[in-house]
Image (tube, rainbow, N blue to C red; front, side, top):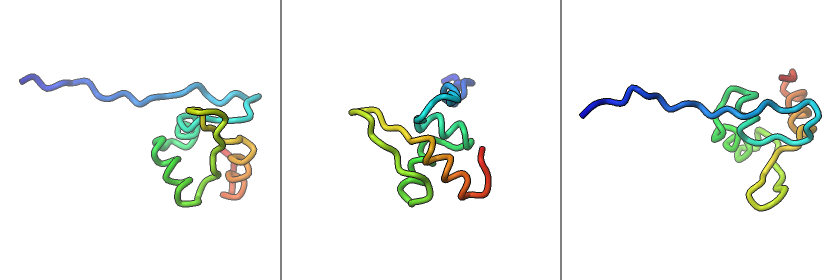
Length: 77
């Protein structure tokens, strides 16, 4: 059996637009250099702002909440 030399590629999202008001989990994961699972884990542990459900299947974070959290951590990204 031949071994695959392909590596699983990391998903990247579009950068957060300067005019955006909300961000997806993948965008936040890219922003902080972590996995999507880590973003959700932070939420579960109360270490990151809770997201809002905009519609079925569409959960996003308010950028104002994320930026306030960043300021509390001692610096913006």
